[in-house]
Length: 235
Ligand code: PGA
View (tube, rainbow, N blue to C red):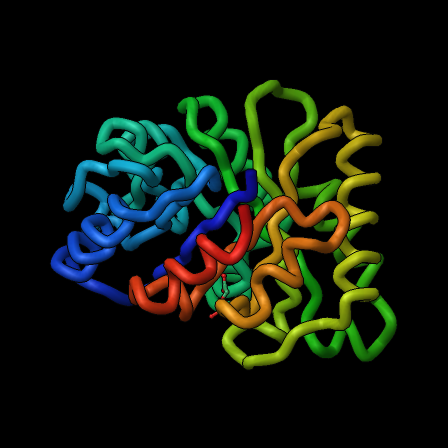
């Protein structure tokens, strides 16, 4: 079983989500399908054969935080997952590992599973800091002192939406480091997803790499014709 998670980012409509939901009903798979959609679409469908998730959450439970959405609110509308610390949140909203960690904590406390993203920028890669950024990302963003499931996603930021993919060796090294780090934090067995320019033509190969438990798919998760072949490319 692999996790196949879609991240719709700020795209789509209720109608598009309904079309996707109808198409997913007919897909025979043992994989765990998750669709992370904009907040306003979370209540558009009753998930059948897939789970629904959000793309961000407030670090606070409730109160005077205009414009924010709490993990409890997400749970009430049926979301089971939340992406936290996506690179676009880190880049455009200055989210640090510390902020990401507190969002992951509130998510876990509300009974949802955070999909915690880590990954290096092109500058960090070019200055040889990839492993350091990944390890500190995991150590500082993943809560280790509370129980509750988490998922970690390795997303090399330079490869997102760019049609670029790291080499198999680079993905292997990153996922091995993440698995070892999680183990040392008492979170052995945490699913580790790979994300960045995953398409039907590279998904199976990427998911055959050790410690790759699934994928987080952006652009290719928006249309059934692109997304379903990714789901069915692995058993
Ligand atoms: P992409 O996005 O598949 O379009 O590269 C992945 C992501 O940002 O989660």
